[in-house]
Image (cartoon, rainbow, N blue to C red; front, side, top):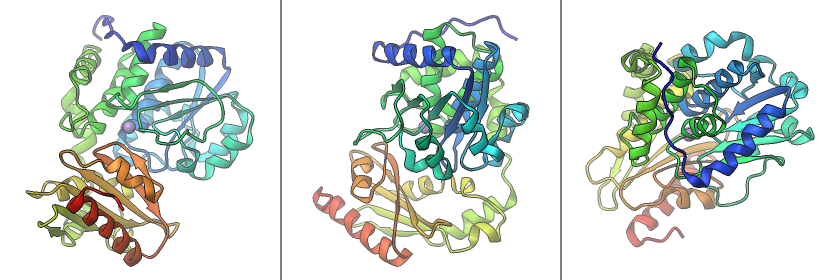
Length: 347
Ligand SMILES: [Mn+2]
């Protein structure tokens, strides 16, 4: 393993939050961390990274997620079998004296765990980089929140830097996965010079970037490709306004034996159509609601666009879960998108 690397300096605005979160972590005896339903590389990367940091300090830290970790991130979680309590998440939360909510600031996206987190009088720390148009609904606790961070994993790195905690190779690998996936492989607009400096500093811990790439992107089940083909068949392009959209056919995930994680990156393919300013992906959730993912090009702000639909996210990547039939939701959302793209107004 490489010698202990010097960590990047932390933006001034994050130091106070980082200190507050570090203090809460050091004071706690049983820490349980969680992330949003259908966790992604950043949600998993930030919680696995934090578990490794806390383990090195001798702290009792567990993971309890509302939904299982996607197969492509199993390589991060498998070595932590003892620490992953997702199958008994509610029991793990009942035992904890500190909750850490990662990559989301809202109770509503914690699925069946929301009730337990809301119901217990336990300090709830939050580390997140989503834009909050309204105050989060989490219980009280320290916050390390900055929408300028490329990923929640970058904020966990900052937490380690401010607290002076040693970055182990296992922690660095998990945080690197968070940066890699939330920036679309260091391609999206949230890839800042600092993102790459932090990524470089993580690589200094002795990581193998090609191996990580293979695990995350280059070991797809055949069903993911078959699903991709089927979803791309639904592509509709409206060049006059710069709108492209795709729909996940009913039952296709089960038919191809894949999960929602296998849809990752599909909406970016719709966005890649020349002249597209906004791309959308529609799918029916098991709850019956319709999940819409929004991506934009240029100055179209899809975080603001998602807000009237009860959603949120980032300016160029956001989402919302909307009640109604697929037809109704598509009709409503596409009409709003056409209005926005043709006259700059959401409604
Ligand atoms: Mn994220």
